[in-house]
Image 1 (cartoon, one colour):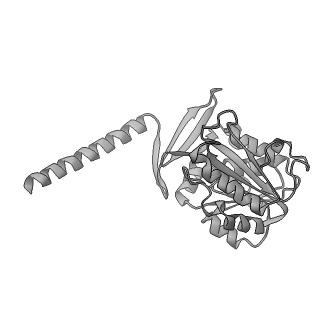
Image 2 (image 1 turned 90 degrees about the horizontal axis):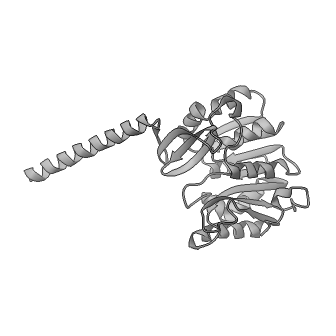
Image 3 (image 1 turned 180 degrees about the vertical axis):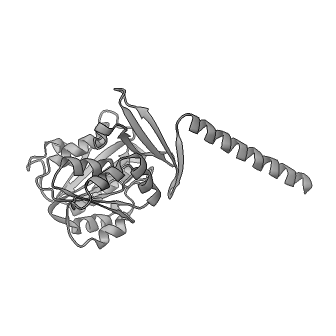
Length: 275
């Protein structure tokens, strides 16, 4: 028994030393670690292909946000799939009230508020630690400060599903960016979720969601089940792939659902992608 206790203590001490060493190595490389509701968050700066500084947030092994880390680009979108979503949103026929479920670094809410006046944006993030990180490192505090009292931006720390159910006024656009690994969207991916979203959209309102899946193979099944669920609820559904030429690669694909034909209404980025 004594030998077993000694071995246990030695292994515990060794594990602690390895953990401390890893933390020192990460700190030396400029990586900050934070505990969040859904796991360990790693925050670090790097640069894109053009050499522009970007800041990245990785939570529990999955990247939640990538944003430019310069003052002049603080509200611009650093990821191409989000820029494609912005092109879609900017061509929607009517846009006054927007709900964004899932905050991360709040890249899309920042872009919406600063680029699409006078749109009013409500953002919902379930993890208060993520909100703290976004305020400190992703420009959320600046957004709140500069638009305080304008009615252009409001933030709720809440479960997005429950928050949407309680919403009393309809939205012209609901954006769902809440995802974790291979199970994005949570209850908002099923038939019931599609009905709840439909009920909280204005007439002709639009639902947009990020689906992180490959386009082919076993791992794509959940994505197409989600597409089918929204196809049963809405008149039109589009799926815009991030990597159309690489169907087995996991990508941030964009689902768009609406009762009206958005392409006919002038939203050209959706042309050719209706399911």
